[in-house]
Every structure is written in C-alpha cells, then in structure tokens.
Image 1 (cartoon, rainbow over the protein chains, first blue to last red):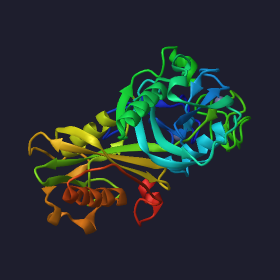
Image 2: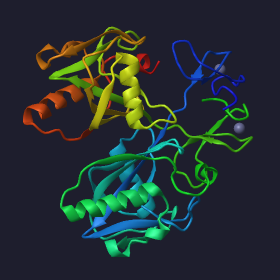
Image 3: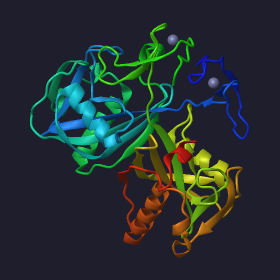
Image 4: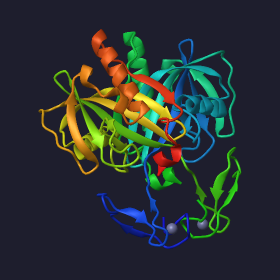
Length: 187
Length: 187
Ligand SMILES: [Zn+2]
Ligand SMILES: [Zn+2]
C-alpha cells in the first residue's frame, strides 16, 4: 500500500496517536488505512457416509482436492458465505450444521471457518473454479493430493469425531497454509 | 475507495473476469482491491462468579460498558488477539477457554468472536480506551448501559449456560450493532 485510496497522496508508515502499531497513514486527508486478517468460510458437505471434495481449477494448488471454501464477502453472514461457496464451487445445496473447525493461518493473514453441512441430495457439479467434484468415503480420500493444511486437518478431525460419535468445535493455528512458497498462495 | 493504493490511478468499479461481484479495479496496474469483513476478538473474563467489564473511554458508545474486544491484527491468532485486547483494555491476564459466541454484525461488516477466559487473579486496571474496569456479579450487570448488542447477547447466553452447567458455542447474526446510527459506529 503506497498511496491513499481516498485522496491518492503518498502514505507514511507510522504509529498513530493512541495506537501501538505502525499503520499506513495519509498526511493529506488524515485517513488511517488498517489491514486485518480475512475470513475464509467453507463446508464439509456430506451425503450418507461420504464427503464432497472439489478438484481445483485455479492456482494456487491447481489440480489438488479441497473442501468448498472461499473469502467471506460483505453483506453476508459466515453461514451464508459457507453455503454460497458450496454452491459456487461444488454445485451442491446443503443444510448447514455447526461450526466444526476454526484455524488461524497466520502467514496467509486468514482465519478459516469450516461448518458441517448435510447435502440435500447426491447432486453436485463442478463450478468454474473446479475441474471435478466427487463424493469420497473415508478410505477413498486422496490425502496426498489435498490442497491445504486446513483442509487435511479438518477432514482428519471430522473422521476422528465421527468414529467417536460426537462432533465438537476444534480451533488451532497453522502458521503456513502448505509447504509451497507463500507468494504463489497469496497471488 | 477512489484511488489505487498501489499506483494512485483512479479506480473503476466493475465485475472482474471470472468474478460475479463489483470490485474496485485499477485500469493502470490491474490490481483488484477486495474489501472483506473484519474480525473483532474479545473475551468474557471471569474471576469466581464475576465477569469483568470495561467502561468505554472512546466513541462510539463513550461511557457504556463492554467486554474487552477489538480488531484482530495481522500476525496474531484469534486467541492471541482476544488475550491482547483483555490486557490492553482491562489490564487483566487470563487463561483462554473455548470460543463461546460468534456473531455476524452484517451492517458493520464485522464478525465478533468472544472466548471464555479465566482471570489469573482479581487484578485489572483501565487501559487508555477504558474509563473504568470492574468485576460484576450477574445481578449487578448494567444491562441498560451495555455498549453493543453482541456484548449483551454474549452475557445473556453466558449466564444461561452457566445456570445449566454446560457451555456451548453460540452463533448467529446481528444486523445492526446497536440502535444508534451506523455512521457513528464506523467512524
Ligand atoms: Zn488521503
Ligand atoms: Zn493501480
């Protein structure tokens, strides 16, 4: 961030009065441009004992499998955003269940929220960001071809909780999203 | 947002290729400037049967009582942010418990996360954003002087769950944060 989005003046990085962090400050109009983590919302869509995964048609991680998820938009709730992504990426309608995982992905400056979701029918289709969409039983999950750590952790916890017959919220952090360079992820 | 923060060119609002929403697009450098909801993290700090509240020394809602909470920063987890706010606003050290409420505050473009937290000692002090900090028993809570709906909902649910002897995660949405004009809140 080099210029003020309100008045186009060059920004100065300094600690505003009463604050304790450096921010992008505009010396002309006085605006302070804060940058905060973004929320990624997604689902674990299930039909019977199977979970729906999408094969990514976009970078990063083109060709790898993921749960449907994406950035939460303005003017929607986390619940609505999770269902919207499930529809856009996987062409699936579902009934949302409770929040299941919340992961801080620190280096990517994101918080990932995955909700359990019961598909209304075994109907789905690849959206523009997906090459393929498919239902997988636990023993069919392509563990070595999953796109992101938050997806593999969420799936691992999901199957563990399911075996124990009780689902609980899991929170934690993932410093890096995956093992490939961050630049390719944030692009 | 009128100008590109990367190159200072005037922005155009249009739907980028492959997207389905209007975004602030830069015709010069090609940057797309997304705007997404922000995360507010806070705690319900308790010592014995009492809850710690802060009297706000800043607008909006100057003089009203709130749970310690504030915007999540980059390079911290939701947990670390919640404890940081508890320290900055209430001068209290606490041990974080589970996530207790997650509220979408749609009009304010925020998601509020409140964690239960056990204070390490009955020690606290007003930070620069607080006029006063005090421990309240349930019957002492100043319900008519609470700053935000997410705070009053969180406290109501906290006492309900405590009476039932079991705490669970509660999620929901609050279209408006409070009944006063939004402009004063977002300022
Ligand atoms: Zn400016
Ligand atoms: Zn530009």
